[in-house]
Image (tube, rainbow, N blue to C red; front, side, top):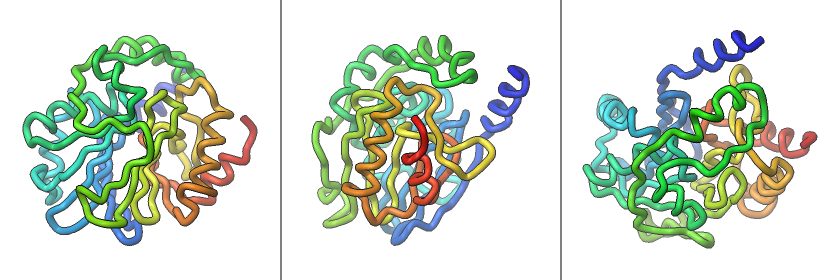
Length: 251
């Protein structure tokens, strides 16, 4: 069973590239070492970047962007859904090289300073196998330009009504979700399943019922018109009905 789990996990670690049409925007998702970086095309030369992968993958992610017609100079803002190495580790590279402003949740500022995770709560066998390595994985965090402690409009970077950022303190105390058009980028509030299109519990979550309450708030209050949800792992997108089924399911 352990070998099977490791095999499935490794099989899904390969790099991948997907384009999803999310009304009214196009989302390009790059997966490296199983973590997703999402690029939202606001206009021909204006992009929003959500998460930056690990430091080890930053240069190859940069090359992949260019190979797929996205110049990093077009990225107007980088939002980190949370401060773990596999989402925030590559941010300093893009910030320093391209002067891209970085947004982080206020509760995760210390993670960027200390350069490793707070204690992790594994939710299954794969997480228990990975826990020590993920906890001790060190990185150099960026210096945030914007620290979010309440809902933040994206108007100043992209114009009126494009989207907003909100706090979803479940996976980490500073976790953020980003709402753009009919899409919600949820970071590690939940993840995609490895072999199906379902939503499922992230590998690390200390308060699963609390996370599901935040998902219900997204579905009913914060983003009631959302049709697609983009997680930080697998996917790259999950339909609303799958998220609704997950949020209603047992804790």
